Image (tube, helix red, strand yellow):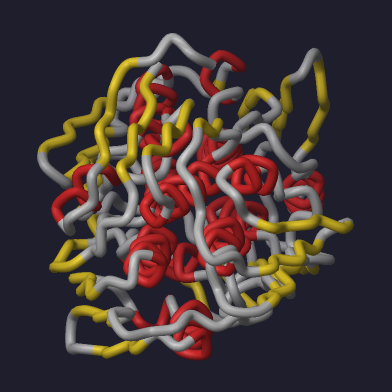
Length: 421
């Protein structure tokens, strides 16, 4: 098991490219199940979650080739329609295979999902939507067993705009008989990327990028190719890395439209943001970071996946910030670890009160989930002395060689083996 050893106090400076989006890739890959042949996904990040999905798809008979950032998926020899517990427990996004398998093959056996060790994130919306489309669903010994002769179009309204449920329903509806309408659909960029891929495969989808999606089912889809969007959460993390170290960093490939909420909050905090044609530049060299309140929301609001990183920045800001997570109420496992570094943070229900301190002091801290890990790395970059971040395998699920990117900007991070847990 690896850990990061970070020598803090280095101002970041330079230019770095943003990788493809993890959450987009994990939806695009199962979509290949909907057509027979070779689909190609460009700008695919080399992440543990992506390799887990490749392994899951390979057990169904999909052959894959992954060279540089191009992932080819060949679905001509699919034989099994099961997603086993041994793989699904590692990653909640495995649930994305449910809709495509059921829609194309009429059968799916998928283990109830696992993933990060925080938050009750039920899949009831996925199952409700598929049942409305005519699927017969049973839960047996920890597995979802879904059957249908053919799904039928239906009117589906989500109580909350779930990204996962929207993606699964969208894929299932492409091959259903008739028209499906999804009301209160998620409109995150990752869902738009998925919808555009499905359209290239021959799907008929209207309302892309809005909260109402209309899908006219077709009899067959064809394999296709698409560029995976850049990862807005990696970009946001790197933006805050520049801000927390009082640095000057340019992110190549970052999409301003996907980052409006984060960029506006950074500007409000006193950071200078420059939007270029194909990059975003952050200049915090002369900034006195001010405390800024944040409340997470569905896109285009402030992402819950940036909440932990924002708390790390606010721990060194001037004043007091209130950070509220309206998406997941218990996503604050990073707070006790930040406090070990000297942060002044108190959590009450789903809000954190962050009183800025003059400095953080390096210490040994432990990652508990993907974004919590990122917040500890950010704090370590700004802290005095040495910070050791344990369990960085969480980071490897969602950030492609993050230590190499940060080191290229002037950070001092060493990845070393550790026997500590």
